[in-house]
Image (cartoon, rainbow, N blue to C red):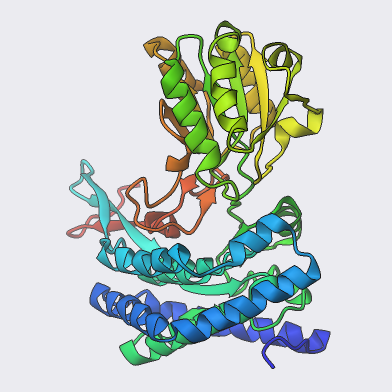
Length: 427
């Protein structure tokens, strides 16, 4: 069976074979036309729809086993592929097909004094490995984005989603064979043995970039052990800062949407910071709306003075990604204190200020260096689709080489191209 665990030497050989085959496939995907890549994406959508019942049955088996194993509730919730999640996954494929192909784009061109023209051209990264937990829809999203940008991809999902991932991968590879895309450009690691990840992290000869998506333990393991360059898609400890001048109704609506819309997502609000000038009036108004929807408030001493039902926040709460109906709340002296808190406890994901003061909004945007910074909007907009990128492979919290939601351009690099008519260096 696909989920069996071969011996250690067998796993190492299996992983290296996948990586070696992906490298060979990447040379072909780099040359594919947009028409061929889009034909594969649209055919994949058709095949997935046709195989929906079988895939969802596999997905239900994963969910049952996760429940029996006592998998963390936030991970288990992300497993489900049915309903809106399925529709969004299929729509995401078609969205990617509609996006321009970045490969071969000349992003700039200039002329040197000797007449030599110098340009920058987008090219694929090569082979991208993605190690992720739960969320089997990532298998489809990542494959579409990687191949559309001319790369090959190796997908290693969590053991809790192995049946779902293998079923999805089977249809993606079959669609590739039908449309002229090398099937080895889409590889799903077929074992649940954790040793597979250990070996994958050492395949720097064949793999160009590694992207981990998951909890702190997974991210730490990958960063510490990988010999491959890593772009982290780390925890989402997102903040909203309600300034003294914030409109009360706007603040309540933004905080509510940021926290309540979806809780088990990385762009969800985890810590609310409130200027002391808004603590007595705006803060209780905002928190009443959250408590009415079942959110537990964990506040600092000043928060509890104006909202006595809040529980006492611990030091650990300020850096926690709850992914649950829990919100940490702190009253701060001013904008400087809010920014210092974000720098001390944030994860470089998404931060928003709610304010009517232009100078405060501009200072916040300039001084907060997280991957997405907003003014008077929900943190939920930290999402590739909502930002106009189509789909995303994740949200990078690493500044090199991509930062924030990573779409097609984030899966390419740029090379220099030179156009001359016989120029020689004079020295």
